[in-house]
Length: 269
Image 1 (cartoon, rainbow, N blue to C red):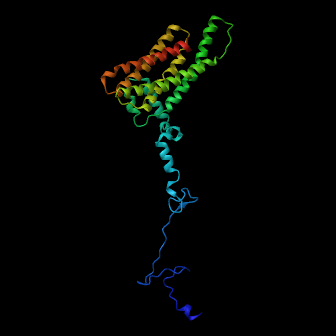
Image 2 (image 1 turned 90 degrees about the vertical axis):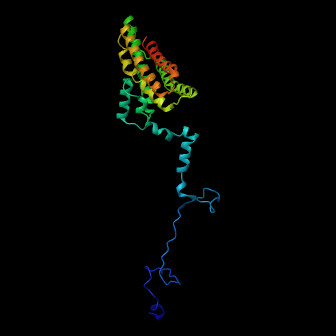
Image 3 (image 1 turned 45 degrees about the vertical axis):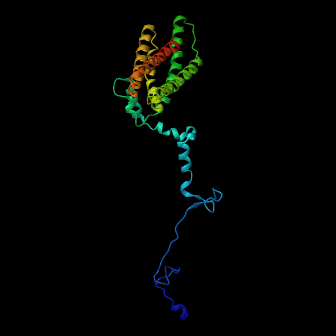
C-alpha cells in the first residue's frame, strides 16, 4: 500500500464516509441536516419561496375551518357528534320520556344531546301510524260490511310523514326562536332531542288504538297526549328563567295535546 494512504488518520472515520473534522478544535463533529418534510407539487405559487405546501397543513386546517364556519351546515361530519349514543343511553332517555315527573330531562342530556332519537322515533311512528291506521280503517269497514276487502291507502303514509317530520322539526325551532326573542336562553339541539323523545309514547299507544271500542280509544289517546304534553311543558318550564313566560309552557302543552287529537281523528277514526 502507498505510504501516503497509510499515514491517513482513521480513528475518526465512520464506516467508509469521512467525518467532518473541525480545523480549529481538531474534534470530530457529526452533523445531521434538519429534516424538512414538504409535499410536492407546489400548492401555493411561490408564497414560501419554492411554493411547496407544508406537511402539517394538509386537509386538517381546511376541514376544521369548514366544520366551524357556515360550510359546516352542509358537512355530514358536523352532525356525527349528535349521533354519538348507544342503546343504553337511548333506552334511558325513552324511560325518562315515559315518566316526566322523574328528574329533569335537559339535565340528563346536557353533556350529549342527540338527534338519533328524533330521527328514529319519528320514522318509526310514521310507519306505525300508516300501517295501523290502515288496519283500523279496514277493521271498522269490515265490521260494517263483511264483503270489504283489504287495501292499503298510501295517503296515510304521506300524511303521517309530513305531519310528524314537520311537527318534530318546526315546532321546537319555533319555540327556540320565540324564547330567544323573549330574552330567555334556549338550545335548539336540546329542544329537538326532547321533542323527539316525547313522541315515543305514541308508538305503543297506537297499538292500543286498534281496540274496536271508541270510548276506550278516546281514553287512551287523552292519557297519551297529557303524558307527552306534561313531559314537554315541564322541561320547557325548567329551561326558562323568567316566571312571566308561563304562556310558552301552556302553548307547548296545548300543541302536544293537539298532536294527540290529530293522530286519533285522522288515523283511528
